[in-house]
Image (cartoon, rainbow, N blue to C red; front, side, top):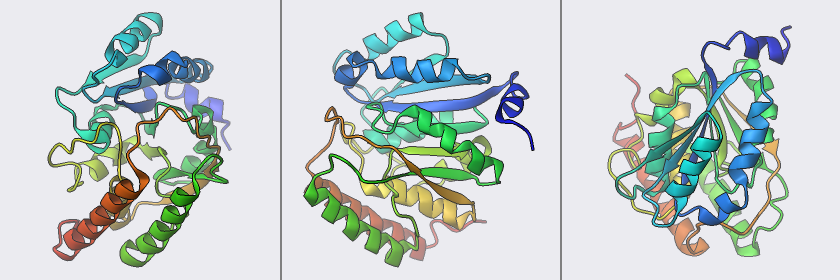
Length: 263
C-alpha cells in the first residue's frame, strides 16, 4: 500500500488539492488569522495546492485583506462576484473554478479546522467520490438549533432518502472529476442568484447530496472537530430552517418532474 506522501509526490506537477472558501463580509474572521492557519497547514504538505477565496461582493474590507494575503503567500486566489449571489451560488462558482484532483470547501471561520482533511484521504483511497464532515457534540450550538437539526434529519431521510447524520457541516471534499457533474446540475442554487448575505439554507447541501445519490456516487461520512467561534454570518435559525424546508420540498418536486434525471 502506498504511503500518503508517495501519492502526494506523484501529483507534484498538478494541483492536488483545491480549497474553496466562501466569503461575505469576513473582515473579523480574517483579522483573527484564519487564512494564516490554512496556509500553515498547507505549506507542510508535499503536494501542490491552491486556495480559492470566493468573495460574494463583500461590503467591508474582505477583498482588500485577501489581496494582502495574496502578496504574502503564494497559492491564494481571489474570485470576486460582481453581485451578491448568496452562499450557495458563491460556493458553486468557487467549486467550478477549482483545478485540483480533490476539491474541499470549508467555512472561513474554520469552525472545522482544515487539518481535519487528513481524515478524508483514507476514504478517497478506498474509492469514495465524496467525503463529508460530520460534527460530533456540536459544542456551542443552541438548544433550538439542535431541535431544528433533529427535525431536518428525519425529513431528509424520509423525503430524499439521504441517510447521513450531518448534511450541513461546511466541510466537504470531492474528487475533482466529479465536481462539474454535481454542481452543473444544481437547479435551486445554480441557475440564478439568490442573495443571502453569506448565509446558506439546508437546501444547498441537500440538493448537492441528492444529485450525488442520483449519480450513484460513493459518499463517506467522517467525524470531524467543530467549534462555535461566534463570528458567523447567520440569519435567524427559525427563518433559516423554514427556508431549508421549502428548498427540501422544491428538491422533491424537481425530482418528481425529472429535473435530476441522469441521461
